[in-house]
Length: 195
View 1 (cartoon, rainbow, N blue to C red):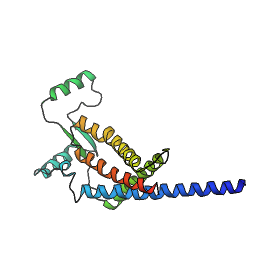
View 2 (tube, rainbow, N blue to C red; view 1 turned 180 degrees about the vertical axis):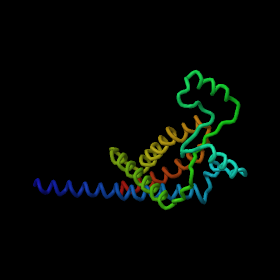
View 3 (cartoon, rainbow, N blue to C red; view 1 turned 180 degrees about the horizontal axis):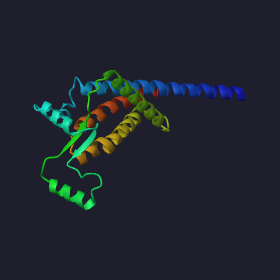
């Protein structure tokens, strides 16, 4: 009897793991495909990559003045500046131009590796979502979609939106991505996990 219980438990565990793995794989692919469409064919993110006619001169100036790859906020106080002096610098900057610069000495156009890393991250996100969903006592399509949206919106609100608040960034494209992609994943998992 004990052996039969162990075999039944093993089959049940394997079935659950298969559901999670397939759910995560397809969910990750859905996320990845939406991101691809959003950034390419649909052009949802074009507002975040605007063209500047003087880009060559700007890049030349940045190259002459920045020695290391990094993220720079201008103006800002030098390291070691007292908090009073840093506050004075910020106050003097009010109403004047400011910028954020993501600077790299050399463009690395390794699209294959970037796409692979993005797909792996999306599959991992799908796996985590499946794990959370399977902890629910009652799981139906509506619950899957709403839980999926809740997780996507949590990421958006705590990262993209807050960055938008502090750095005056446009986050509507990110919100569109969250609403569409996580809804689609929720629909998929609502069907698959209840199958």
